[in-house]
Amino acid sequence: MKNELHYTLIKSPEEIDQYQDIWIDLHSVHQQLRPALQDLTEYVERIRLMLREGAYYLWVKNSAEEIVSIAIFRMHHNTYQNKLCFLDDLVVNEQVRASGVGKQVLSYIEDFARENACDHLSLDSGTFRTRAHKFYFMNNYVADCFHFSKKL
Image (cartoon, rainbow, N blue to C red; front, side):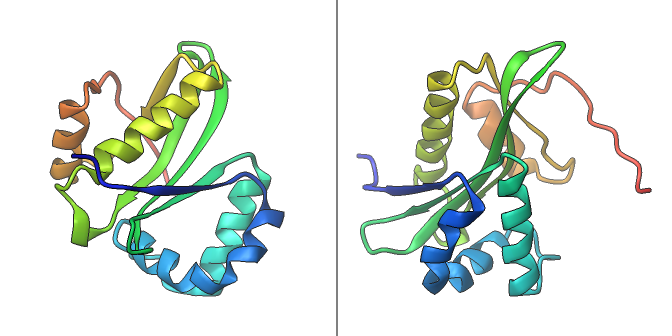
């Protein structure tokens, strides 16, 4: 049986001001994936910047009004996947992992991408995140390339 989830999708930095009362909770859940994001003010400003650059910020609550997931994604074109939705971050609260929440949230994002004429949903996952890799493989994702980066 599916968990009853409530989705809030933010598309612009102006929208987030009405949700100041839950920023501490959002920040806390997001730190489970990104522990380096220590400062709440810097976190909110980073989210605002990403929204200005065209990202979408999604959070999901369960029926008890607890934050169970956060996602950041954006759409763009490239030369090999045409129009794609790129999933920057998908965080499922540690307290509800392996309950089906991640699959439901990923399905929501896939539907959003399809509705916006995306041909692919792509993401990067750290090489050490083996639980995440298993999750994506179980949801029919393939590891079809390497991502390289260099700190400048």
